[in-house]
Structure formats: structure tokens, C-alpha cells
View (cartoon, rainbow, N blue to C red):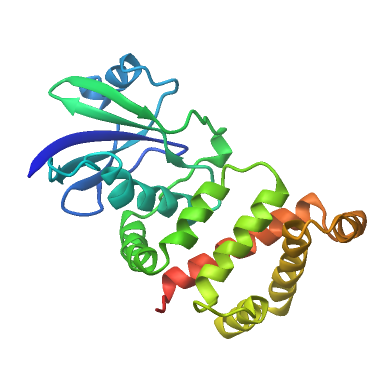
Length: 256
């Protein structure tokens, strides 16, 4: 087994009160400004400055052609990226992958150049609460990785059409058993079982109708829906937030 030391800067995350140990090899910590780590990151070619990094001692089988990357992404980074994005309604995520050798930082990949404004930053108020959440998240992610990965990727999409399709795929992954065709009914019933109020359930019902009009290229129905008073920018944003609440509910009490 070979070990490589990776540093992954995180955008949109405020400074931590202390280190957060996610597992034996992965620590969430502040940038070490006393040892000029911020300067090393800048010199490595990163476009922005960061408060927090993931510090990963990654072990892998060097005979595997998929290691260390994309193995690092698949086993660790995708999960943590989704975890941060879901934790609160904010704009935080992974910015780059750097390899650390002594005092030398080599940028391997730029993942994002986003630079959120201050009020969009995630603030982890309690390290214990975040660690407890991460433990639950890991179990939920292991059962429904597709749902969380789509949610992660959907967070950077711009159009409501794309987000609507993504959101319904997420809900199908959470609620609909393999092979079932009555997807809408499973989603609606599943939300009711989870205890969501009727306004949330109705919003998802309407979102599915909108998604169906898009994927079936029903221009007449899509135009009719969009010309009505319901499908506004605010409605879409509120409904996508319901999808986030569903995922958080699943993290709290996952099922097979």
C-alpha cells in the first residue's frame, strides 16, 4: 500500500473553532497561516483564498490503475462534497486537490473556482454536531449514493429545467423501489410517511408534473404551466429546498 498526503481547500466555509476528525485519515482543519500554508496554496496556482482544508492521508494499492485518482474522488471526496452542500443551505464545496510533499504543494486538479459572498458561507457552529451528522450521512450515502451525488452536481446548475429533472431523479432514488413504474405515487406516499406537511407534498407533486412535461417534450403543456401563476423563481427555489429537506430526513433515518 502507498500513502499520499492530499490537501483539499474548501470554498465557502468559515474558519473552525478546532480540528474536526472525520475518520482515521481525514481531518477538517483551518489553513495553517502560522506556517504560511496560505502562501503555499496561492503559489500552487489556486485562484482564491480559503479558510479551511481537508487534510487526507490517502492509502491505496498503486497497482490499481484507478488510484489514486479517481479513487480518491469516489471513496472520499464526492461524499464529503455532498455532505457539506447538504448540511445547511449555503454555498460550500471542494475547490481543488493538491498533493503535499514536505513544504511543497502541487496542484493536481482545480475542482471549482467559486468564490461565494460572505453571507452564503457555511458556519459549523458545533464540531460535535457536525461529526454526528457526518456519521449519519455516511450510512445514508452508502445506501443512496446516486441521490446525494446528483444533489451535489445539481447545486451548480443554473436552469430550473435541469434542477427539476435532477430533483425528481433524487426523489425516485430515495423512494421508488427498482422496477416500479408508478414512481409519482411512491414519492408522494413516501413523503407522507416521512411526515411532510401537505403543502410540501403538493409542491413535489407539481414539480413532477413539470418535469414530466419537459422530458416528454410536451411544449404545449410546458408553456401552459410556465404561463400560469405557480411556477415562479421563488416557487422553484422553495421546492428545491423541499428536496433538500427530504434528503436530510433520509440522513436522519435511512432505510434500505
